[in-house]
Length: 294
Length: 156
Image (cartoon, rainbow over all chains, first blue to last red; front, side):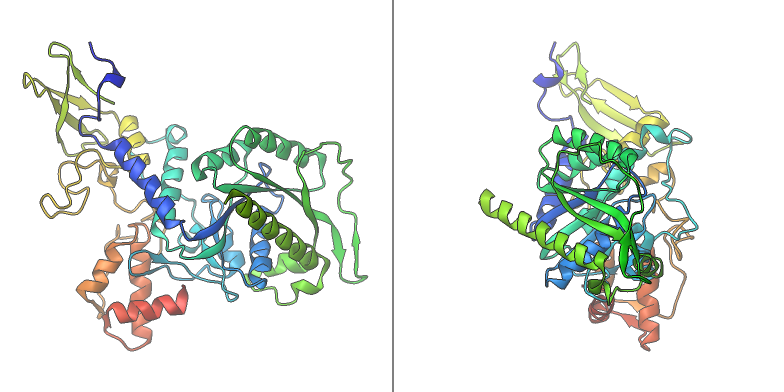
């Protein structure tokens, strides 16, 4: 009797063929993007989304073409922070044209589609059993977004990942080896411990780990123009990655995020200067690696 | 998943797909050698797993009979779950399941075709927004020029 592997084709269901076609379509759609960078952590609440947005701003300030895909479908924040909450997704010639921030960063976020008063829900035949299929459905949604949006020619596409060490690795699997990872932590041993688990999990795969950024590294007091300690970390957990920079917490920066207004004067602050340096280091690293790969 | 006709030792071929019924699909396979037919009846969880992959079971009917891909009997698309847009209940303007309310704004065939190119979950919001954009500019027709103007205004 024939075994599964003796039989060529799938008898007409075309399921595998369609999954392969989806992957090919994603590859085609991202062909004009020079660098794919996923901003993750594993730990929640460390400022991944804020850092993603401001890093995008710092890259944009260098004249680079930048887009953000808010891949945190269940807690999307980029639409609000980038000021594109009410923006329209317009049908282009063949794909969806993305809304842009005032400084020209293209942003896709489910927050532009689903009001904050609603949870993201999928219609399902399997009522009450979402743990069996939900992750698959979310990655199918990510696939559809990647295929549907007009990414055009970009220097950097930043993926703002959801929290969870296991989710971080799932995104690495899905996005493939072209995507490099930038991890975010805060100066807390608890946070670094979780990020270390993400590093361990990602290190088993082919994705390149660019390094990490220590966010909320002190508190910037505008009154006395100094950065004061915010955490008392011993930094006992070694992440084994280069630190691309440290960014102090700046209440003014947080206010701009809540209001979705651009940061016109960010470059004058310690946080702005740190972000500018991280952006430069990041793009230098990405370009150098691309040159080596040629 | 593949099916083998044991007496003939021959792979069975998909023949037809019945309309979804209460979350279940009926997929009929037949043996090309002896003609024996069998139906695979999925439970709701199995249907949902296939649906979650964002694929449709069976041949792409586009081009075969002019119907868009996934329509007709050979489809395991969102209709299996009883709806088209997965976020219909959450997206403003889509509470009617994707159907838009009549407005004085007409869509040209070319503009409709462009709208059809974008994912279903974006369409209701895009349609409503474009019509509002048109009306704000005193336009009564959405054509490709207006779509390009909206694209320039909002996006890329």
